[in-house]
Length: 237
Image 1 (cartoon, rainbow, N blue to C red):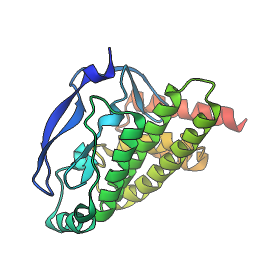
Image 2: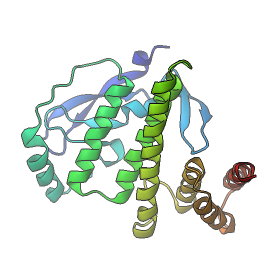
Image 3: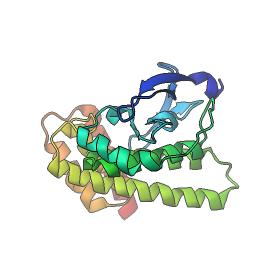
């Protein structure tokens, strides 16, 4: 099935300028999961939903992941208007699907908006995590012979996953659970997975130990920890 047949223009109202606009969104139930990566990124058939996770107002330039789009205080709204909207003149061409380049531009607007809003570390971390995964999806989609481009995308992927981990580590210390909609166990599992992905093995062991000692850890989560342990063991041999 073509990607454009899996998305539609959903109407949103901007919390900054009150404009109504349409944003391409994945149709509910249409994304079919096929696999999960080591760091919990879910892969789907025929579409990369990450490309459609940022809502961007084409009138004022405010952008955010859907989870955070409407969560704007009076102070944050004022900052967005003064520091983004007043100088925003970008024209976005209407499309029936997004390329990876289109999506990354939208994520960069989300990062800018988060910076201007002075958002929590968890929001920055979630944006960076999804950007790292997006660079990976783009890399995986390319033909094998595009070696140089794949290496470039891998470097960007690692950069943003590292940024995500750093933001999440601060969020874990300063913010209350749930973080980004994840309970403590799920969040620690994500951090452990990111550490292994980034070869931060000592940090990974710290989180894995906390998970195993948690009485609420399910068999599925413990199995994930043992999988991570095996990867570390094989790499350190």
